[in-house]
Image (cartoon, rainbow, N blue to C red; front, top):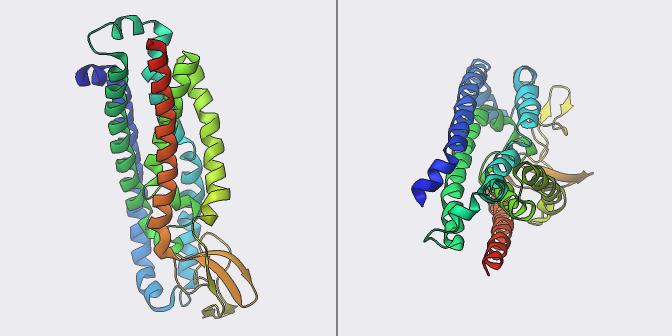
Length: 297
């Protein structure tokens, strides 16, 4: 069964490998350029001594050279990619069998259809986890110089570093498997899976994520003064930061009070959000398995 599952999904595995290779090439080219610029502008020393307050021109030059491309362009291109990967792969697990009528042969063998589905899901999900983890490693390495200015909590980094990228792929996969069972068509299943995937992602990102943990309160903000006055704005690159530590995420600020999420909570937030999407994935796959078992009955 494992060999059969591999043969059924090997074209998708080859496409995924090609996508990963393209990401590696892009990440190497731009990542090396950023590292070279970061070193030439002596930003590491400046950030260590003054959080960027003593070298605003160097920070501005680096941000002008790479900020839009890394923080906006790359993020925009990859915005729907996890959902597309999961939906394309997941829709073929049951949707293709039902659409093409091959289920009559696949499910009439000595292997029960429920076991057949479990093995299919295990093989494909493992491949998606490997792909998601590899993409995360590449993106994390590629963004490393920019992350030293922005931290990991900004949306542009948070969504692609850590655990959530793989969880996003799995959630889209689970939805596509379920819709493939319900619609019995591959393309409609892909499209139908993307709609709730986007909706849930928006709900989690903007409504739930800010409340994963209560923000800390800074009653006497540490403001580092630049030549023209206090620094720390509301942009993606906020150097020096209003909380006195690069990587903290300011939530609100009023007068002498600033509410923020400390950079040290990054992995806790990642674990909570990834857990939500994995739980939803298991729910979707559980419903798909129940429907398949009911069809058998």
